Image 1 (cartoon, rainbow, N blue to C red):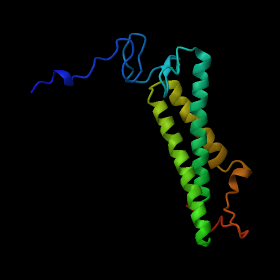
Image 2 (image 1 turned 120 degrees about the horizontal axis):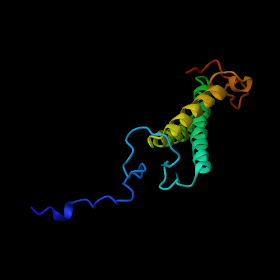
Image 3 (image 1 turned 45 degrees about the horizontal axis):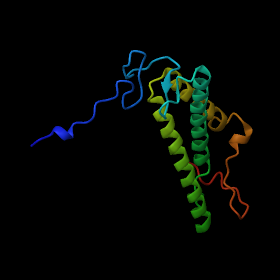
Image 4 (image 1 turned 120 degrees about the vertical axis):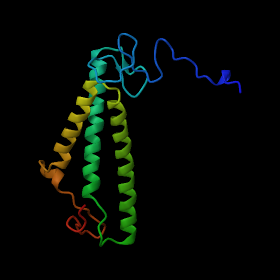
Length: 162
């Protein structure tokens, strides 16, 4: 059987398939420091300078913090056991939407960390820490009031605990 046409094309000498190269043209398979990294998208932030690199780190931290906040929000607003069927369905749909958004953010942060850049890893960890401090730790009074208000006006915070 002739397999000549089955070979994959050679990788470009400029950029490998995953877009991660060091200054010698090798792909990064270990953690490294540096502002020349590609996070999630080809060429971003790339060689655009230190300012764009810090913007990318800030966005990774924001995504991680938002994921932590959504995680806390979904835990605090769990399904009340005594709510009507219609209220449970509405809450269930809202919680599903929160979960979907949270998972999307979580996977984006994970893929960003897979750039193997130490700055990106630190930004993700700091973002998760800040998100937990703001929403999950109970440090702020507004973050502790997590009761579920149903249309009948009752607060079911103590009924449904995760």
